Amino acid sequence: METHQKVIQKESFIFFKVNARLQQLIFVVLLLFCTTIFVSPPIALVLGLIVANLFGHPFLELNHKATNYLLQFSVVGLGFGMNVHSAVSAGKEGFLFTIISIVSTLVLGTFLGKWFKTEKKTSHLISCGTAICGGSAIAAIAPVIKSDEKQTSVALGVIFILNSVALFLFPAVGHWLDLSQKEFGLWCAIAIHDKSSVVGAASKFGPEALQIATTVKLARALWIIPVALITAVIFKNKSGKIKIPYFIGLFILAMIANTYLPEMERIGPHFVSVAKIGLTVTLFLIGAGLNRIDLKSVGLKPLAQGVLLWTFIAIATLISIIYLK
View 1 (cartoon, rainbow, N blue to C red):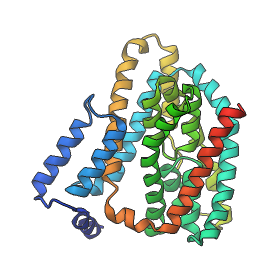
View 2: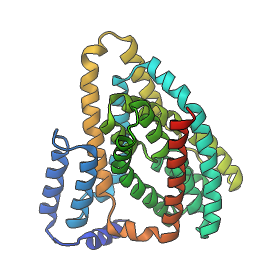
View 3: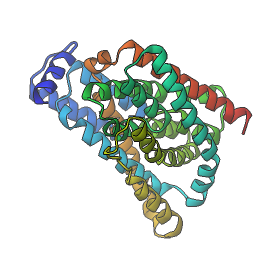
View 4: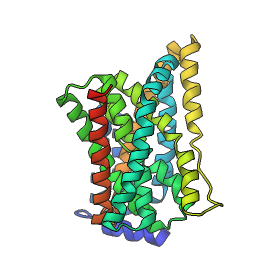
């Protein structure tokens, strides 16, 4: 693994080759810059992409774990700025959209995978990542179907590329169509793959959009469990372990505390502020984890499947929200 990381680092350099100490200094300075008010989540993602592909990522072996834990911490922190009653209302409204979109995305993903002749396990991971919650769904489903490193990394590459696009595209489209915060929050929760980009896009659109998007997305993440069980049957793997997103429970507890404990009115906003900084840093790390080798390894067929599948769910959900609500 260490040798593989060194190869990635070597081939990730595009313009500047610097010594390890300077590389670490540049990376840490930009990471700290992302904790300031001058950097929004989308800009942090771009900074991560730039620093990793110009100078390399000095802590690449730690990137995935750091991103995963920091995102979970940030999501729980955002719970201290949300109200249980509003969350339940948003969850009820998004429930029907969630069921229809998950089933239709998985079915269409299967057909697209066969049409493009995408490798079966890679195709299923892309479909699950698009249908539920991006990288988290892929991480949960991968051990169930016993996918290898190549299959998993290709699926993650497709999802992360489209997440990066969504972070910029969705707010622009939302403003262009003059969507309400409620409409936008519901749309991006269902149509954007990963929690990080959902929260990033929604926070850029407005506070109500952020609350709705976060609640609906986390409720959607619970569908990992039934989808993983069905997957185990389809792939005939009785021993596959399912990763349950336990941090969602902490998010719910944070909402309950914020709703019913008077003290939270004073300290809750501080937790939310720290959580938003954590989200910005998370997106910086996600960008830094996307190097040229990862992007090249994706391939045209899996990427085409991911793009078509994402386009379908984004347009279908948007039409449903606007015209069938």
